Image (cartoon, rainbow, N blue to C red; front, side):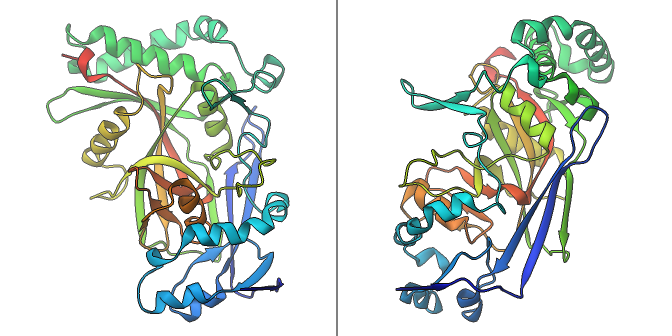
Length: 357
């Protein structure tokens, strides 16, 4: 395998996504430029990568002539690309993770990312949980009355307490960053075919999402991303989900281009109730009101190729695949989608089935 200097590619596409200026919401439109991979294109595969930093000639790619991209040694490719670790992190044409942005810190005892209090502070427009609860009282009363009128069956005596708790949780979560209230179009209750309430939904204004030239996507997915309230506030404000976080000082990790979630292949256009019900039930197994990730971002992800199932290699293989392919289905049943090809639609609080009987 040899490395040669990067060359400008003629076949490129520019994606723009984010939020335009709207009252107190700061405008932030990101531009992500991608280039068609030349060697794989010659083999009949149309995959897109970020701005080229180097070109590698690999005999591995010859195997796809006889099979599929799934058969590539993605972890081996990951190890090869690690030599570009610093260059990739310094590439301005990518979406940085929350840790790089100073929004997350690592909690060493539980080995997980938690919100950085120095970012999520009053000076930046965020409110404490107690302040959000106090500020949401009148809004909660209004939304509760409206939903009672529109969805009376959801407030049956056996389930009313949990439904009201879900409404309160969703509104208080939004009020941890009050400026986002201008982005909410409607509150809804998703119910099953038997009128069982499944989730409280907030329909948010869609983000700006354009491509030049216009891209045709052959595959579409509905996704659900369970997260914490403060992270949700940033996602709604910016209009997209940032890629999974990695410590850029750790030389064994490349910067991801995708985020993890649960997903379904929809049977209908738009956000059909039956597809939403399947998605909510799946996401509820890993989040919901009784977990520490009690809000769920719902949206649609787009792909120019059929998704790839990760054969082996775990997270590293997932990250490497989504450097070239738009969607991957991991061995642990999680999905990974490129951040700049995914649009948010709803914020949900998923109700717990045992509390609704």
